[in-house]
Length: 193
Image (cartoon, rainbow, N blue to C red; front, top):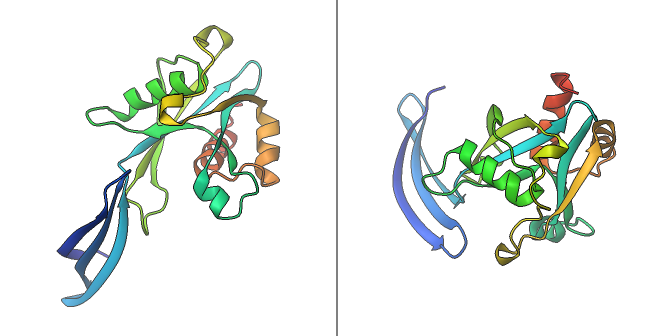
């Protein structure tokens, strides 16, 4: 179904961290029948994420960090286990972003991430599209301890786990981050490990 949309009004509600807007639009819902819709939308730009995997050791690199929204929504500690990820900066390609974020967060320097798909993670309220990557790693690629930037309030624990252990954690609900679940399943379905 091809929808026609007319933006009627857009008001910025907050622009402190990301841009939060109230948008009023008209949508052609059925052959010239227009419906007025008002929504609040969070524009945080696009992001990228990567799962590093080692085919010899059968391991993956994940991170653990505090996520306030998860804590506020009932996660007991707010500490989520995730794939490395970050917001794409202006004039930065998704591949450039994920290479930089991988070094900052995990300490591994990669040169050839492979993009596997893109996805909107919460399209009912957030404009962000995530670019998903995978890449192999080995111990020789470790250039620092990772952990993110404390000046950006990133306090990231780097975790090297057996792939089977990560899959078990996902099945038991210990891994609840959607992008991480999607990439673990990608590796599983494509038999990369």
